[in-house]
Length: 96
Image (cartoon, rainbow, N blue to C red; front, side, top):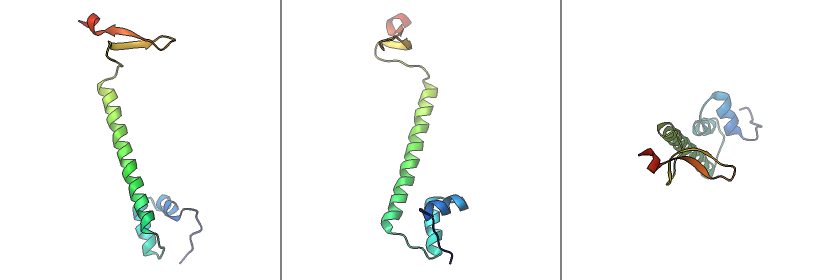
């Protein structure tokens, strides 16, 4: 069996063969490498966190598309901000 000299053999295997990290662990275990259950759990958690992050980012992007302009309690549309950071735009009263 060829020896793996990479710093992170799972990541290297994953990139080289185009598989996800869990698949790389399973295939490397078939080839005779051993990994702790703790390491496998860390990989599973990182994959879940990445999926949650992607889902959250997608929801935020969809919300921006559905509501493309800035607003707050006083303004229905904020056109911009002054140098001091004070918003200006159309108030709810002006809109009616």
